[in-house]
Image (cartoon, rainbow, N blue to C red; front, top):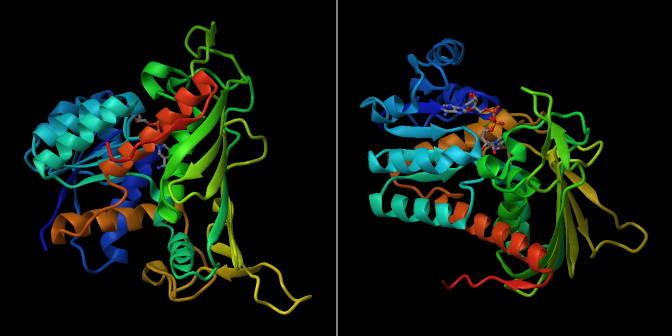
Length: 376
Ligand SMILES: NC(=O)c1ccc[n+]([C@@H]2O[C@H](COP(=O)([O-])OP(=O)(O)OC[C@H]3O[C@@H](n4cnc5c(N)ncnc54)[C@H](O)[C@@H]3O)[C@@H](O)[C@H]2O)c1
């Protein structure tokens, strides 16, 4: 086993989550070497040096190009706003480094395609931080579907609802600007829901979507001037999967009361499965074969029988959290680098997610069904 040298770019919400997971991964999983936390980069050297001290990295730099050039860094970990992903990832790939990039992979399909092609040609490991599908309970759901435990799937209803931009007083930020974020709720939240659909049931064949911006202007925090919000607060879609199964999406960043409401209900001919990320240690399962008058959803609580859960805790029902999903994600990344295992969701999946997002955007613009051709 060899030690991987990580360079982390961006030390906000996600940068901190990555740093926590890098510090913990080899304590949880004894089949990988503890990564070396080499350098962090942020927008100015003082901020970066302070972050390096707080997050346990050897050094902090004010220019991310220095981090990519650093010979001690062989994995570049990108936790910056969306518009920087492509430029940073391409520079890392060209320098022969493995790349771990936050979602959404890119601003649009062209960028995502460029990244997926460049990473494949360079032969580096490429990973996208679509962490929710690393939840052991979702692997249980997928295994149950594959084993026919709910019969033939007949419908999927998925939502990702949050309320972080509900108030019109939430100021304008990079998340509202197309040049910096790409899409709005769709890229920020919908990317996870699309990845979840792919994980459980496969890809869409065609869809019809609608996008809505309910808070059209927000105050610029620097000047106080009102600025036009350039992307959607809400995205909805009616979908037909390649398998013919119908699905629906509801995605919102202004869904009052919801904090991390990534949920789905999946019905089958012999049962059903329901999940809610706000209760991420529970899977609700319905078995239609039960005695009449005794049927109902039961709750399976996460425990050591479920995937990597037992690495964290020997007792069921104690629960994993979002930072643990990042530990699982980084463990898989290290296994891919050290042992050649396949990492998923990789840049190809990041591209597939981006293609579904683009199909939703063009459907909404044209007001009609859009087909996805996965052969090309
Ligand atoms: N996987 C998830 O569940 C999840 C959750 C939240 C955010 N994200 C993604 O993570 C990324 C970052 O989001 P966030 O919420 O952490 O944002 P954030 O605003 O909290 O942090 C962004 C960081 O990037 C730094 N940065 C900005 N420009 C930079 C530059 N030119 N050079 C170096 N550093 C720079 C900022 O100073 C800040 O430290 C986004 O792509 C977002 O979609 C993923």
